[in-house]
Length: 181
Image (cartoon, rainbow, N blue to C red; front, top):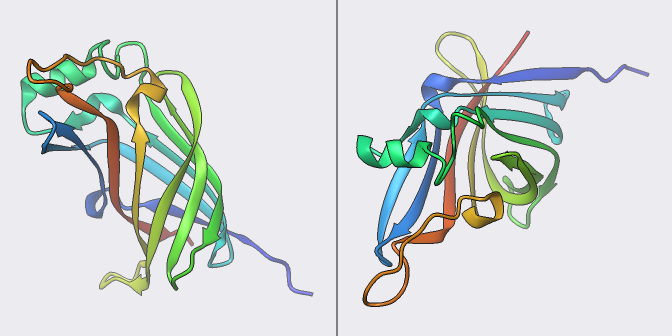
C-alpha cells in the first residue's frame, strides 16, 4: 500500500488578490483590497477535497484608493490595527458543489479577536504549469459576511433613511497557489 503524502502549497502574492466590496449611500459600491497577506495549504496528494488552509491578512494593508477612508478603516471604528494585527481564516472542509469545479469552503474567520464560522464559495480554475515550471492551483473565492458579527459596527444614519455603509461585505478573492517540492 502506497503512503499518502501531504503536499504544501503557498500563495503567489503577486498573482493573487484579496478583495471586498460594500454598499455605500445605499446603492454605490466601494471596493477595496488587502495588499499584505500570506497563506499555506496542505492537501493529501493533489486532492483539494482533503485540504487544510491557513490564511493571514494584515488589516493595516487595506486599500480602497482613498487614503482618508483607509485611515478610518484602520482605526478603532473598524479594524483597530493597533490592537489587532492580523485577520485569519482557517479551514479544513472543502465540499464539492453541484457543478463541476465548484466547492463550499467552511472555516473560521477571526477579526478583532472574534472567531466565527463562515461558508465561502470556491471555484477551481484547475491546475497549470506556468512558463517557469511551477505547478499552480487557481481558485476564485466569494462569499458574504455581516461585518457587525466581528465588531466592525461604525455607521451613520442618512437623513433620507438607511445607513451610510452596509452591514454586508462581499468577499472576492482570486488566488493562485504554488506547489512546493
